[in-house]
Image (cartoon, one colour):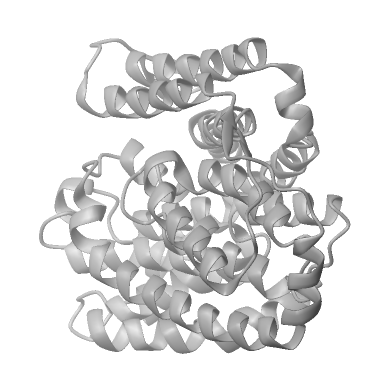
Length: 391
């Protein structure tokens, strides 16, 4: 009973609350930026949207980049007949794989940063795998979208010619400054030691960590107060996506507690076969299996707590993992971030993107239909990455 209470308290206070504050703040601030223009959803335009999202994902997080770009991308393709593949690739690239270079990019890397991983460590070690995966996906998307666009080109161009063009503009610019505040808060928590430490229900907290979360909340509050209501209305902004994420991930963070405890038990626990799979006969780490095991669980248990599970299994000491265990930490980071794209519940922005697209009346694959897309497109790319970088 004591272990259970302590573990649940740590999962909620130490991990879930900072996670949901971070994701919710990015969602709120990014949702206050409205990009107004008459983009035309051609293959080149759509591919540029995905490439821009890949860059922004590391600056404002996969959540921020996805929430900023999904609405103008929907508008650009509102007269296209074939659009489902565009939003599937958007989840692959912008909501997941591209955000692998900084703790701002994806929630599991943010949790790693909280555990002591240097801010720029992931950029140094994951830049080549990320560029390989995103480059292949962008090329495949462009070819696929070009084929589908040619099937509807005449009717699409006719529809575009009758529409009134709207000049480019960005509304809610104050939110860019607030995004900068959020980024600064993350950096502050990583480089400044307040010297203040305390415990809440047995969970160790630091002054800089609490201040970081307060700044996140303040940025979100200022965004709500300073952004004109018509800007959020133009974005069709609602709280439903982030509320769904909050409920779903509350359940995941709590129910993964016994999984984490069994993993901590190592070879003496119920998950001894899993531990054996990621350990070679000589006791060294099997990095390819770390990548695939972390990834397999990330697609269905959410990638943030899964990252923590395998981070702890690999020793849990950031200073060791960043040096002699660098390839292992690289495999865990790649698995949790890249394979968060494997299902709708693999990463928080996935669920948000689906909710927004469906709220606009557009069709998305079912849960298992999306799995067919991810298995058919992503798994071959992940096999290539394993061969190139982990063996």
